[in-house]
Image 1 (cartoon, rainbow, N blue to C red):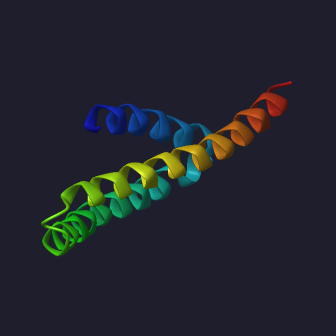
Image 2: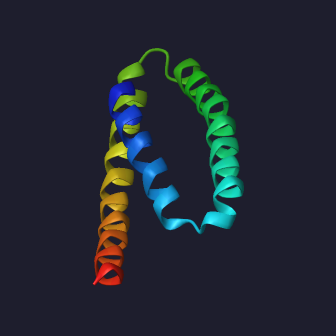
Length: 92
């Protein structure tokens, strides 16, 4: 999972840099870094609470996490498809 996230992170950062005006790239990348840095400990706290709550059925937490990741991936596919089409039409 971490390998997939790392690959996606590289892709997402390059997409952000390509689609951000040069004069705003520092601010946008700082904002992106701040959001991701804050989201990691929040995610760890949520996982900790869920694992405590469902300690007898940890598999439920993992299944719910997997479903959530798949849904986000499917939604992101549509978003990145639109973004790619927009870039393709702008290049023509």
